Image 1: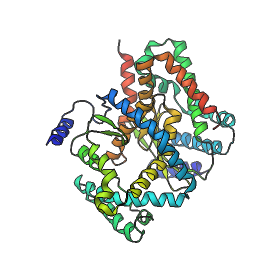
Image 2: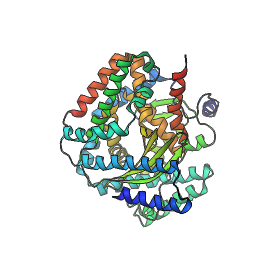
Image 3: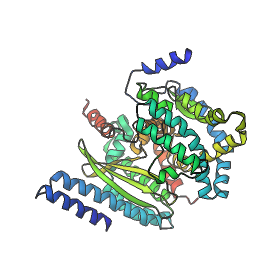
Image 4: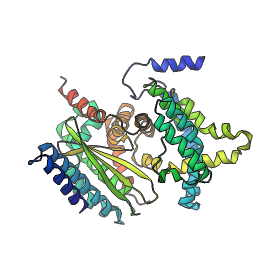
Length: 197
Length: 237
């Protein structure tokens, strides 16, 4: 509802400047709407008691919103090119599973959390949707969603990039233990996320 | 003198600004392992216990008191960085919270939209040109860099420097436990996500410092460059 109002306000503002909203403005509104829809899902996920139910609700949203292929490619760095197509697809699937399981385990209790959208900025060949997660305690976390070609490839929380952390983490494991061990580690993390605390 | 030479060395480092630079990785990993074991065995259980028995408003108040003491350093560094507004806001916060806020327990200034500016001497050195610096994992203190080391050490001792012998060691203990309790959710995320917690912590530290140096607004293009870098890599033969 708030997203619709926000879009309506954006559209009204633009109409005074130009009869036809630019493609850029349309794409920005679309990016904002996608992120807000994801936040609505996260708030619903917070109210679900079971990890499996939370994952079931998140899975289709993450599949459509996140560019898991790019995230997999950038996370693996040069190792990506040493994998054949089947291995690349398998890794992308594993990473998508990890993202879903991680979100589902972190968003596991509703305590009046709220999301607010602070705006959308066009940068280079993509957009940044700037948002904030407000907690009941009064604390807040800035969450910036980086989109390219309409999909999220990076989420930056309080200035810390999820993609950059993933790349540093994975490449350290590849360097010290090899790609096969990385896959094993990721499977372990998925299992841990699904284990009730 | 030796310290000046050390810092001068930081200034002349080549490579990308704010990029991860860890020439002492082997020693740092050992320091991380020892510190992490002590943290998990002693500090984390104490911090969890503290969090459990303390009402959240009181926990927040204790954090506010110690942050209020450090506002002195934050204000000074705001001015040193040529940001009189930031320095002035912190100075006003110090006056308001120390008096109306009863020794800093209540953050009255934030309600008047005077937000903590979170400046330190490491950020000042970065603004002065020491953008790239060697990573150091100091035993018991945690992640820092050669550039940030003075402010990392000063952060712990500042209240004692202000109050001298009147500052009881018990207060230092409360400061440490309170700060650790505040970091529990971040370390829980690290434990749940990281495959190599050392590399994860190091990368997060460098990113967080860059975020603070840019006062919460690092260049957005840098995040897209990460993406483009690999696009270009893919075109390599």
